[in-house]
Length: 335
Image (cartoon, rainbow, N blue to C red; front, side, top):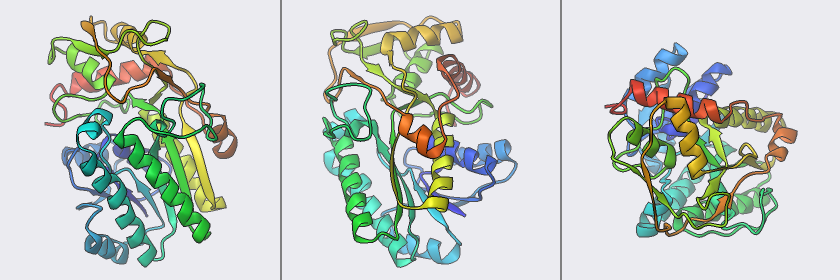
């Protein structure tokens, strides 16, 4: 059984689907701080079986100990964490308490349970403002915000851990920009309050919940002045986790890999692609740059393809179509 922390969240829930498709049983641990209990019903409808579930927090060491005693866990996929770049700038202590201390607490509980296979959600933000693109796993690391720093700190701690105890099998997966939703339209990205990410905001403008999209910065040295990113379909990202799990259970060791497409799009290109997919107009305005943002970043995903045999299968059209299907069928999210 695979323990999936944050498994009711956006990326975690889609990974639970991919794990079920690959024949793995899962146990979700989630505190619903940025997710909804209805996800569990949706996962059952998609997969035909209801995932095991425990409501709780990764910072609760006694709870983690009881989980590892009660369930036969073979590996941990760790998605539980705060993830907003802009929010992290105003709430750095909260981000480090959750993303760093929470992860350390989880690792300590795993060590007590003598469980040593761990897949960590890292981020392309560890590349900071890259000197060149596409970025490779060996590219210099830095950070421009506390969210990215929390991921960078944990990457270094995991490196220290594996050097000290080679029995640990660890993957550090550097996500680029997940978008889209499951093709069923049953699960997708459901942000609380004002969305921090581009696609859910575009969705909410298109469906009439918000007047217009604010695009942060129109004067970057990019194709059209707006920020350029590597957007990856969330189900491709989820399947990358399954490939990583298969690899660790078979080969072990320490793995660091970019999970991206290797193809970059500007904010305006994403908006135009969404307008085509949804047949809706998306009103927007260019506003000043946002603290912590960079001009461009996209992946060289060749290492993941070589080592894991994984690469993305879904293009921009499907990212936009699946995202819009989710929004249409769930105009108020999971509420």
